[in-house]
Image 1 (cartoon, helix red, strand yellow):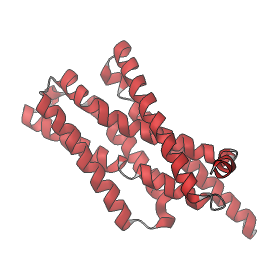
Image 2 (cartoon, helix red, strand yellow):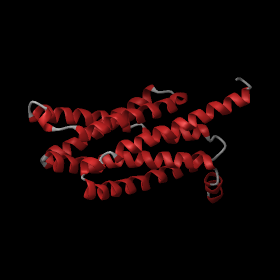
Image 3 (tube, helix red, strand yellow):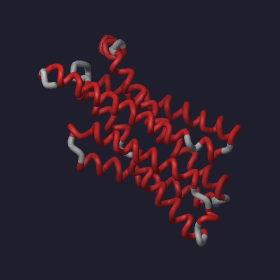
Image 4 (tube, one colour):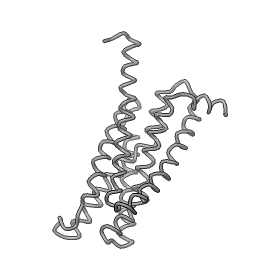
Length: 211
């Protein structure tokens, strides 16, 4: 097992996917961890409304992950990841802009917030399994099981680091401003996987000799 792990760790390509999982884990867990606090601190919500917001986000993640698993074919995983990362960037960028004063009533505002969190969940849901699956396609020469293990480990420090860093920034600049770390994570994920896709296309053209 150590030999298989070393064989993967010495490849620069692996570290691109490591960074992708690090960002995906950070964005996803920041939403999970900070969403209730954000609702309570910025919108003066109750513990129930804060918890329900997290539940709605979780339902969205289930829909996004299960739906993409049923509907998206393996060779479209790259497109799925990039599209969902861009969508997640847009959706999570809107959350800090929401203001109860812009809505006619608290009920309308709450509905808009929960709807947005649901779509954030749909966007974030496919990242964890899809990035790993796509990495297996791009690195077929390595041990698949070990690659899954190492990439899963990459997401965990991303969860911890960005959750801490969002709180750190929240203390200094306010939680609304620190919330923009989440779309930055998703934008970084889109750039990494998009860059890998362009690299794959160049390699394919070089192999086939097509211009």
